[in-house]
Length: 184
Image (cartoon, rainbow, N blue to C red; front, side):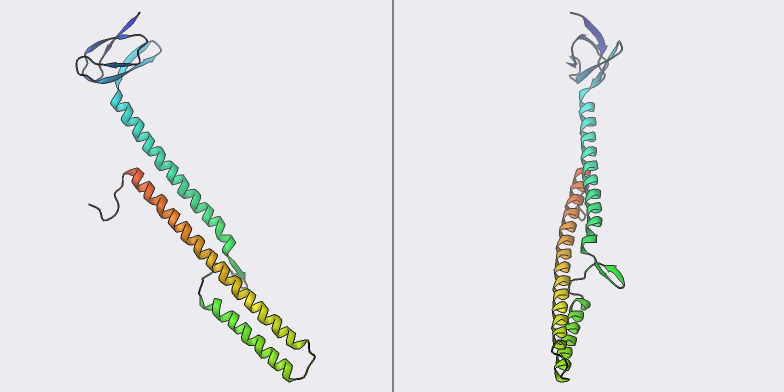
């Protein structure tokens, strides 16, 4: 059995190590050492430094993975916004559930439809004219309900996105070892 003559990387004490050994404990200082070999040369490294380095790299990897998850979530949200956009004459916009136009426009359309039916019935025109008023009222109800449904879906999706984003940001801060704001 061949042995290697090495020195402890911590205290410098001489070590006799079996050629096949990968780990050794220094008899002088008690340090755990890793035996490294490269093209005929051999040396020792402190095992604690290697473990610390691995833990640091593991922590960095976790942060990177969480940051990638956060970026993916943001990209998906940006792409998903197109599903909730309302398109009109002035371009497209995101729904504002409970906004004034969501209520005013359908009500105005219903009032106009009732006015149309009343006027068409009172002038004694063809019986098809009041039907247009009913169609107008139905279109108003459909557009109002559709906008309300789209606004509610947008609100729910936005809340899910914000919750998930806040959760990922907390995990990133925890993985970095950041303390929560306000904690001393």
